Amino acid sequence: MTELVKTGVEGLDSILNGGIVKNAAVLISGNPGTGKSILGLQYLYNGVDQFDEGGLYLTFEETEDDIREAAESIGFDRWHEYVESGEIKVYDKRTLLRDGDFSATLDRILGDLQDTNYDRLVLDSLTMFQLFFDDEKEQRQYLLKFIDILKDSGLTSLLTTEQSAIFPETDIGLENFLTDGNIYLIQSPAGATSNRYIWVAKMRKQSIKNSMFPLEIAQGGIKIYEQAAGFSMVGESPPWFGEETE
Ligand SMILES: Nc1ncnc2c1ncn2[C@@H]1O[C@H](COP(=O)(O)OP(=O)(O)OP(=O)(O)O)[C@@H](O)[C@H]1O
Ligand SMILES: [Mg+2]
Image (tube, rainbow, N blue to C red; front, side):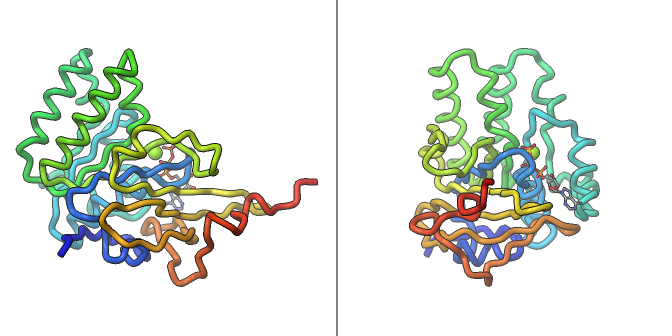
């Protein structure tokens, strides 16, 4: 039977029919502010808090302090404690960009990952990671190598990327094909406010509920309403297409 890694995010494991397939690399796509970073933090936090699984968090955009503040502001109160104990290990922009030579840094990290005891990994973001390469060929080579190492080292990973779910205008990148799962986070205007949704577009080796489900970000993190009637991306118009424009 396929071994599954529970995210512990309310509603999400049920949509995934139990969790993420162990050793999978899953792409989390969405526009700015859709909750990609919060989902990543929550996945690692729950790993330690509920399942006794350690996690690695890699970010090129923020410092360790920024991440702790973000985590604690949303209610992951013991984040700092878990970092202190080593159950969560953060590679922040200072560690990652310290040497000035990005490929040397990357080789060092990939070396670390190869014999890691950690179970979960979050890379926030893959978009930023890809910007460090001069040409597309080098970018592709590293992406392939990186995803291979993640899968071989027993890590179950979430990689965030800035990509919109508005189909079919979406630019489907190589990263969508190379990863085992694609999850989209969507925010659409609704009157004076906005609605949030999640859509699991693919998950290899796993039967999933692939409708869109409402999502909420509040104190405690992300919550998904999988009991609400999901709607399909095919056939029916997603909510933002049906709205009056005049
Ligand atoms: N404590 C909180 N309570 C309620 N909502 C919050 C809280 N903290 C953050 N949010 C919401 O979550 C959104 C940010 O989520 P997040 O930072 O995960 O987005 P992102 O997809 O990573 O964005 P980016 O692409 O800019 O990195 C905010 O725009 C805000 O609406
Ligand atoms: Mg973010």
